[in-house]
Image 1 (cartoon, rainbow, N blue to C red):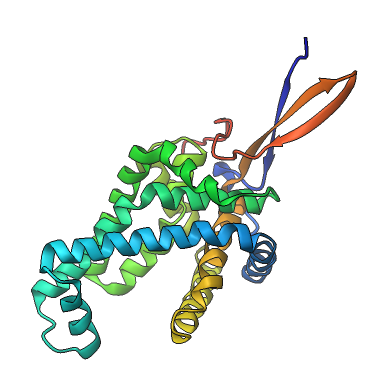
Image 2: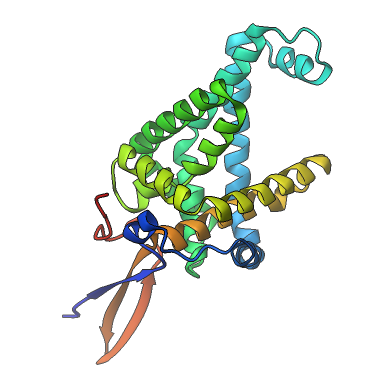
Length: 274
């Protein structure tokens, strides 16, 4: 009878290192690596990203239709600047809020695929559904994150933008490290504070990429969206690390190893209580 041997190994940082700021996060190096892995995995990653984009757009339009009767009311007011009432503004905010929350499982699936890319593992479009294993916890986490961001934006828009960046690692922490949403939000925020300058530089560059992509009638988003997810995955790996499992199965007295590419099921031994 063949005996399966499983070994775990860790790649990148750790929660403890992230809490002390003892991580390597160089903006140029992160962006260069993200460019390479996006190019390498582009054809298999793009369908999953497009699926996420279409699903979120559909939820956004549905929410606007429920609130305004016709989504065009919002877009016409936004484009022309005429008739942009408080009611329409509120409808747009709520539509964006609930589309972000309800799309969380698919968002997790795409993010976990990007984590695979960050450690050199291949993916396929169907892996987007792995996020459904975290449906409840991902929705709760996104609900908390979006609420905090909304409160920050209502105080001052730049606060909302900073919180978007500061809490960006939380949902991955919940799913990859198996920690609670509150702890994940705390760790993501503190890790960002420790590396606020390089994080800000990376996100500013990403904002420029998004503006440039929109200026091309949205065509540039075909590259920018997958690139963005891979950038986030590399930041996460460098800050918090990823635990992988290698399975060895003896075959005719010769061990044959294979990687378990399901990085969404790590060994939960990397939790540091701050």
